[in-house]
Length: 381
Ligand code: PMP
Image (cartoon, rainbow, N blue to C red; front, side, top):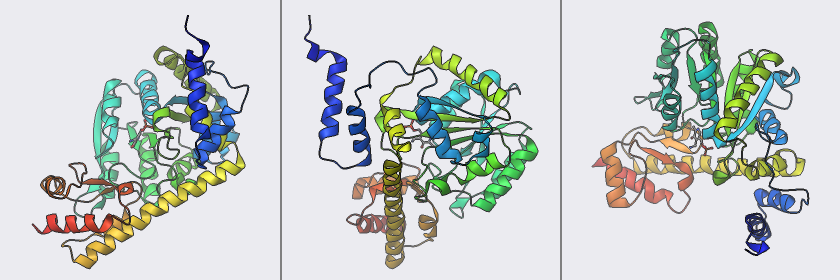
């Protein structure tokens, strides 16, 4: 017989203790410590739709503490396998129950590669709407709106509420108003995928603007939420699908169908990451520490954008570079071509995706000049 100390639960507890006692004053570690000291904590299953503390704190985070929809009891939530699982869960539900048979899901061109895979995987046809304007290196609002206009009524549109991946280009509040006008007039269904709340502007409220605006206008919608980036919980798979329905009865029916489907795929969502998130979201002191951490990360990225822009201007690098400071969030679509990216990799050992997307988080005050010089070289040669 194996000794008790080899039991997986004991081992997990030892790992948790190890993490929690490491000298780190970070907010996640404070949450870890609270969990480790909780004698009531065990490794029992969570309910099928996940922990209530977690899913309703997540819904409140994206919709706002004073959300009318929450007060009216028409907001549901399902804890999912991170943001990917939340998109999948919503897509799977739509594939079974969306009233317009054969309706397509429109995704932005370009978008996070998994969007197509997830929707096609559940049998929903995928089409693209224009988003990136290569000429202005900004939003192709005209193209986006005209695609929404010409799509069949009641199509599904997948929208990034903030920090669009991969372009870093977000609509302004006025542009969101125009987008909502067309979405409403055409009876399209809005599916928000929110993987970066707090990372774009540094304000959790500002980054939720589009979602709250749509909800205030009376849209029924889904929001997939990921806590991978804003909590640094990548491997813990903490995510949520927030459901905003017209009435509490509709919300109940959607939740019960999602629970039925979730039972067949994962039975119960994983607990640890969601516990960290709910400890922080439900604790005033930790929440405000988390907000401060997010703002400092977002501001560091904004500072790096400015430093890169200033350096390219100082070097007189051919072309316009204002998009570097106009874009927002972790990613920037530089406009560099695939052959230029190849030279960056081979000659300068600067690695980025072939479509010219860089992760701004990879730049710091030590390497930003080197990167600007490398860009200057590839643009000139
Ligand atoms: N949606 C978008 C737009 C993303 O960029 C990501 C992460 N790259 C996700 C969803 C999902 O991430 P995760 O499953 O790790 O939460």
